Length: 312
Ligand SMILES: Nc1ncnc2c1ncn2[C@@H]1O[C@H](COP(=O)(O)OP(=O)(O)O)[C@@H](O)[C@H]1O
Ligand SMILES: [Mg+2]
Image 1 (cartoon, rainbow, N blue to C red):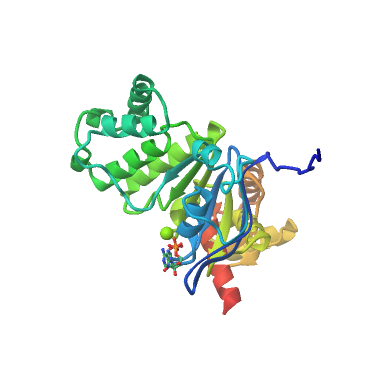
Image 2 (image 1 turned 45 degrees about the vertical axis):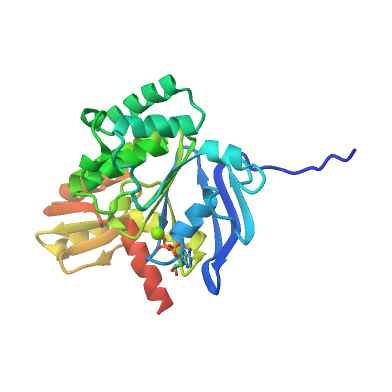
């Protein structure tokens, strides 16, 4: 008997290496590589048509890759689809709901499809409805739900079998601002429970406060570590505005701080909130009349723009 020595990477919730998939002559995913860690929220960012949904369908085991390797919690979807299905919760970008079923029936049936006993599935359905603030709709048909409420039901459906890995395809699409904030908080809670979350979007600002890591995708290809380093750097950028911009710039120069001058002050790099507080106190102590001090804004958006510039 031969024993094959393979080293499974069990530490990553999702591990993808060189995955490709075509539809006829359309190379929907050309080469995708990424990892998602447990307890982390990772953004999958790219313009419409770049291959996000196709990649997620392959991760969930619903679509076969032409080539490349996928591991979900250590399992290969090609050889161990049952384990992958058990590990993954999938929220599709298109809202399919069974309009005549009540919200609770929907979740109970879904649970039973995962072979959870009916009573347990019902209990779990109720607790999930509370969690996504739909408890008052438990006994009402899904057709009365608004778009945002349907999204939340869809999210609850993805969680019915308590999956370790969540794939959310454009979950914020069509949500009003309040629902987006609620979605963000829920997604952070899922990660805090130790789940791995991969969330796709082509709207960058909505992801900024939700995600720990970002994977950029363009024309079927993931862009790798350069983009991640650019996001990390963009997150350090602080904008400082003062009543007298020249006085601010002079103070920064005297303090040997690197900065880019702007018309209203300066942009500099500050690592962490404690350092930011210290820097602000120091500037004020120098007599600079600071009237605005904070992160430059969407790190993901800045990175995305910078990458597009590079391509030109
Ligand atoms: N079932 C399919 N048949 C043919 N082409 C497809 C199919 N699914 C996706 N595509 C094409 O593959 C590309 C990537 O699509 P998709 O994965 O949906 O991108 P995204 O989710 O990033 O918008 C697009 O050009 C799309 O038209
Ligand atoms: Mg899509």
